[in-house]
Figure 1 (spheres, one colour):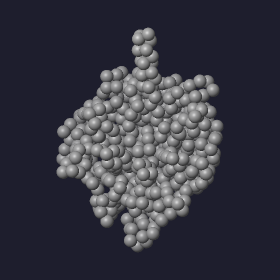
Figure 2 (cartoon, one colour):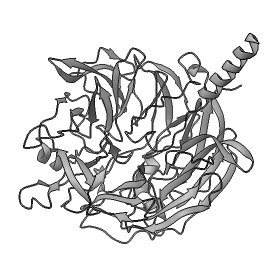
Figure 3 (cartoon, one colour):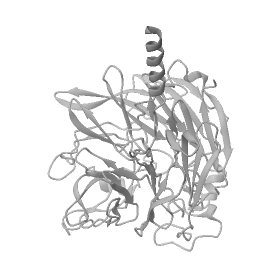
Length: 528
């Protein structure tokens, strides 16, 4: 009897070990990138990862986009029994559902594509080309906002919510692909990750005046933003982040900061801005943080374009934010700007990269991640492009070869003089354009995208034809690093043949998934 009980306990333990789901970009509403429930992949076995399968989809690139960050559900109830499912959004307004273990296509749903967007910088726009590969990477057409998947209802059903290329919010049955919600027209094309929070489907408008858009699942009412004069649009690759009080936060792009000329419609560029949904049915600006050198940043296109992350440290909710300037800010969501001028963070690091103030090939891009190790230490992990700046920020551990094209930097949250600060701990070896990491079991899982990020050339100047960059790009490489030291444990080497752009690695149940510009999807895992 004792043996049977032991075996049952082992079986339950194994079942629990296979319960890691990845239901939205960044893994959760705080965009932590931390796969807390992952137990299959460990520091002991990560070196044994290998390519399990790859499949060629029929997605054709729009600008530099093709396949977006995958999502994963374990043990979904389907007509054929429980399945481990993988969902991948294609920029050509198609979403796929695959068997996560074999790569077999289960279903796909295709939406009517949106017309090509304008190409060229503001003031120099012209009609988009017929071949979408030539489109401006700032406006690629189609849909690039990673969906969000609901929790299972009482019957085990889940709904995948997305915004199609025409700005319609749609809910699909995760098992069948059937439309079960919408379409609800918003008039806003979504560029970045969708949030799903308390019956609200939430995303950010990346256009100039921008604002938060949401759709109420129960009432189907569309909520837009009022009282926001703009500021470079709302950015951050993983989409908005949500604090415990329901405030929705995101970063703004290059734009003017002017909150006095029209206080009812403040312009808050180059900032982290929070919005709250009020009883009038509109999202309104609640609070913000603007670096004091915002105008210097604006003139150099060094906006804080990353998705921040939120975490709890010693019982207090904190936010970590970064951007192309390449400093990390610790912020208090209860008083984000710190002082009346909104320019005072809790703490700010020195530059850890981009000492040349390069707007295109350097800086921190994408999203900030965070995790807590077994000893209770809180970590903040930040990707970057270009060379590190060790003469500005001293990292006790600097891995080799030294970062020249990009990498990942790790900081510990520590308390000094009663205030939280960030201590630099390690910086990774070189990787071509370090992208936002995910964390599992003390492992930092990231990738060098291989994306050539040049936007201006001496011979042709500023040019937004994406085929120029695509032709000069290399290939993506996935890395697994030790979370304590940044030392490489495993890499995918040359097994991935294409690069990717603004699309991250996903981990679920010991498997790593990534898509590339050529429409190919890869799965790495442990062979049985």
